[in-house]
Image (cartoon, rainbow, N blue to C red; front, side, top):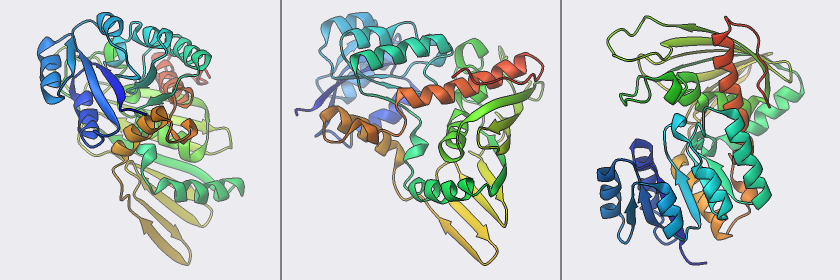
Length: 330
């Protein structure tokens, strides 16, 4: 087919990340429209991509443009119906994580995607690290033999200095907006989480005004297969964090980017990611829209990503209710 015609809603920091990927697949896709409430950001985008048109109202963009796909790159609290217009018009959807802070909203989006049989993807790009095919197979064997007992995980993600991130009602806090990548990999590699219990810590970060997000949190995860996991995360310091799985006669350490080290009684072996998994994530979606690959090759379609969203929202719910156990609502 001809190049995929793509529109962007939101031209901020995360959109810049995707723009770099589009510059490497000009033969496959063309950004034809850029929408942002900040007109200067939309203007910079159309200057970067020749032939693109700028908008400050996504409703006008949808009305005037004939799009094959849309990338929704707004902050979590700003989803106010753009997906529903895209669905109505039959436009395939790539949505930046987390897709919303309202699980009922996400369920309605998913129902629309299914009804129209649209192609969807969510920006949980870490799944595309090329070490995970091996790791999933290796772990599946040990899980099936009931050998993995516990996980010990952490992330210190730093504090993004954008206005909306420091407000819970806009970002959802670190567990939802940032550490969702790590929780998603826990699901992807070890199975579904059926219950969480969480506690929060505030008062460590005192020099950022208008800030009400959690400085740190700890979560106990119970998996459907019996594995128990603990996850500590904080928005101070730096470092993406690790998942450490402890098995009978062994330990598996897994980095957010896919690097791993497996220690067994008689051998130690390591692997390192060698692909650009962010590029792979975007390009897989575009290839599926082009019909060059089956949509099942998309590793994080909306139908699966909504489970990671439900998990992180359950963590917030548990913290809001004094650490009471909460079952993810999917």
